[in-house]
Amino acid sequence: MSLNESIVEDADLEWFGELGYAVGHGPQLVPGEPAAVRESFGEVVLVGRLREAIWRPANAGSAIPADARPTIKRYLQVRIEGNQKP
Image (cartoon, rainbow, N blue to C red):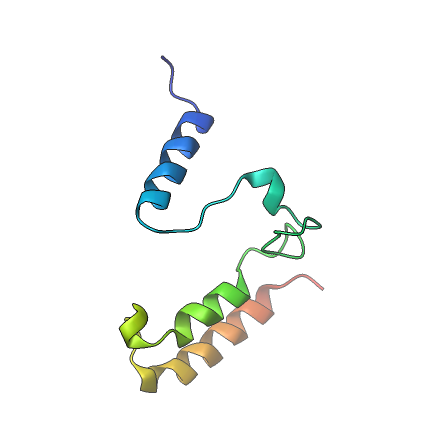
């Protein structure tokens, strides 16, 4: 059997699913679909998910100290907004 992208992707999705991550099928997640996670393919950083991860409580798996979160948010916001296409 030859290794290709589909084999690797299917194995990864299964593995992440077993770890408790929500997984989805690519065509259902593209911009314009109800389950889309981004507004366009140019949106590389998933800002909503990043924001959720930064502000996740420590008891819910966040390794970011609460007092560092505002600084991290400002740092990332400047870099993300500076790299977005108009």
